[in-house]
Amino acid sequence: MDTAAGTRPLVEETQSPNTTELLNQDEAAKPKRKISNLDDPYDHPLPKPDGDPWAIILKPEMETDKIQCDAWKDEVQTLLIFAGLFSAVVTAFIIESYKLLQPDPNDTIINLLTQIANGPNATATTSLAAGGSMSPVSPFTQKSSSVRINVFWFISLILSLATVLVGTIALQWLREHQAYPASSPKQSLAMLHMRTESLKAWYVPQIFATLPLLLQGALVLFLAGLIDFSLPLGQKLSIPIACIIGFILLFLAATTILPAFQSILLLSSRFSRDKVPSPCAYKSPQSQVFRTFTGFVLRTLSFIWPILYCSDPSWVRYSHYDCLPSNQHHIFPHIYLIWAQKLWATFDL
Image (cartoon, rainbow, N blue to C red):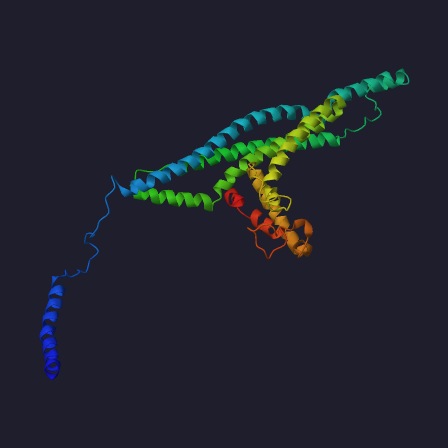
């Protein structure tokens, strides 16, 4: 036992140097990691693309920008054609309605001849011929309907011409936006990013969205003046004209209001989970303006009418929807949050 116990340390002592040597050999066999510099090549380099990498990145960005600019150009050119034709039509009506604001010289001549013919005796006629005075003619007064018609049509013409002016200037902006001097793809990409950000910062997309609103406002004013112009011509003519114009304006109002109120249909308790209404497709600049204005009104009402935030109005409960917060029992705050979205894409989501 003692011999065995005494030999174990000797064995361990004889094995320990061998193990240390093996470890040292393994460490020496491992390649030492070199400290890399910035100019050193990669250990596992990525495959190089065919061509300039900046040009590859620039190509899809330029295509996206071209698609957006072409859409604006097509819309503005269509509006310019319609505005030109519409201005010509309004001008023709203004030429006729403008006469209603001035006294007719033929009426003055008729009044003078009537007074001469109805004179009491020849003496009055002789004194008239000698330059005597006559009974004064009643002064000319403008009819309120004539004033309204001309106001509607003149403003309509101004809005139409303003659409042409702003649209022409906007096309010049796009031409300068898409003009790139001879430069490298890297510089062109930097210029594209800078110009795209400048379009958003200076509200150029909003200006393009305003052009259809100006032309639609001009059309509405012209139709309103046309109804007023047809009223003195008799009911047989004014009633059909008013009905047709009413249907046109009703269609415009419905397509403007419905996209904003689709959130009410979605959150209303009358729809079940199996019957969720589809998003309204009547999205346009005028519906965007209406949604923004309605959201502002709703926010104002939330401060002056606290009953909108009551705890349990039965007609606006939606607690059966699992996708909505369970601690809320009214839809008005959520409708406001939906209407406050700036883009239709986020509005639908």
